[in-house]
Each structure stands twice: as structure tokens, then as C-alpha cells.
Image 1: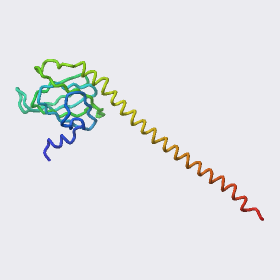
Image 2: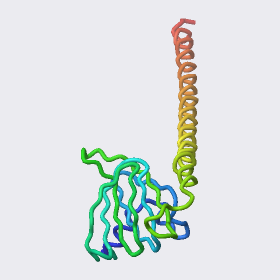
Image 3: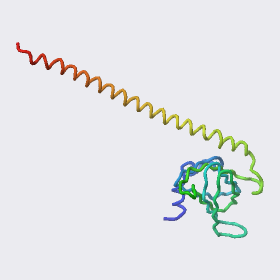
Image 4: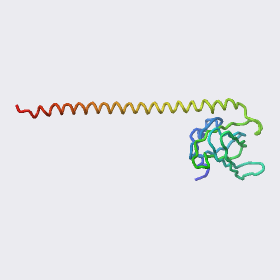
Length: 179
């Protein structure tokens, strides 16, 4: 199998949707790898967790030589067009946690700060956690609903069993009486 296909099959779902823009906030689950091949300059910033990056591609001083980087929360790396980045959640203790990161395209020189950083901070810090909270509350609501259905079913079985027990206790002495 061609290595690019392997990496693409390991990507998390939102990045594989071709019609969606890649800029914004993303999560990378533990044990998953992500391959980035930007067409424009961009800044990769880690918001939560720690990643191991392998960067290869068209670097002016070392073309085609891969470089490894470890980025922690708050750190960032400028990625040039044509470079290939493979990243995965990583922790030296072996207990890697999910990683939240932001990818911003930079239309200006790669050393300059991207525009709309406050909007991206709002997206990563408020909007994305709010979406996750709503999703978690929905899943919790479904779990509570399923538990209620189970409780009602168990209550019905209990009532039927209690009625059978009572009928058995009442009917048994009546059948033993001599006529």
C-alpha cells in the first residue's frame, strides 16, 4: 500500500473532508496520526497536550531531510508550502492524551503573525469546547433515557412477578381445602 494512503486513512474525520477548509481548531485523538501537506504558509500551534512532529519537504537549507520536533501546549511551528508534516499525540511517560491544535494559514511572510488570532482563540477556547459539551450532554441524555426505559421495564416485570406470587399464595390454600 502506498504510504500516503496509509497516512490518510489514519487521519481524524474532519480533516479528511475535502470541501472543508483546513484552517481552525482541531483535535487529534490518542493513537491517531495526521498528515499535513499545506499549499500556503501556515502556523501550527498546540493548544493542549504534546505532539511529535516529523517535518520533511522543500526546506531551502536542507531539502528533503526530515526533522523531528516535539511541541507542547502554547508552542507553535511555521510550516512552509510543500513541506510534509506527520504528527501524533506523544508523551515521554507513554501516557499520551488527546491533542488540541490550531492551524492558521498565513497569507503574509511566514515570520509574521497571522491575522484574526483573537477569533481563533475564541474558536479554540470557547466555541469548540461548547460544541463538545453539547455533544456530551446529548450522549448523557440518551444514556439517561435508555436507563429510564430499563427501569420501567424492570418495574413492569417486578409488578407481574409480584402479582403472580400473590395469586399463587392465595390460590394454593384454596386448592388444599377439602370440599
